[in-house]
Image (cartoon, rainbow, N blue to C red):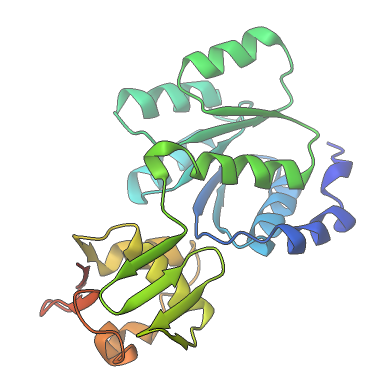
Length: 239
């Protein structure tokens, strides 16, 4: 399949569209070459991406990980992607779904949207448009997160990734800013370590040993009520 919109020149454009919010994406696409282009481009834009090549693998991944969005091809080798979409919605899952397919008939688009898809993008496509559509899905009301979170003595800007503690700028690594955002989305709830690992690491990557020192030791300047570490080492809490 020829997909000129995903050539190297367009992938470089991802540098200008780098996501400022952390999203974990599941891509279900059986064309390995196309999947490789998409994964590379989305990773360059700041996404954490898992890619599988069949509907069964997609179903298994969705049962394992709480994804922020599903990018779904329809013409899969085992069964139609619309069946996967229907099963997802029947299960009660509200994961946003963007259908990415070469099927250009109106009936196909209508059926997909009626089954619960949130967006539909035809192949070939521009990587910039895919990134923009995924960002738009993140901005839906159910996923809204204020660009600035202020809790305790901390002020964190999720767009610029800037942290201020007691009004003074505090340096953050990329990983630390990712963790802060995950916690900010769940203020007031206990966040299991597994959830943090799932949001930050894709399949095939090993969770960092960053956790062994604990969040409180890592950010001693941030006072409660922002971060507390549970006595259970498997959990950390944003309160």
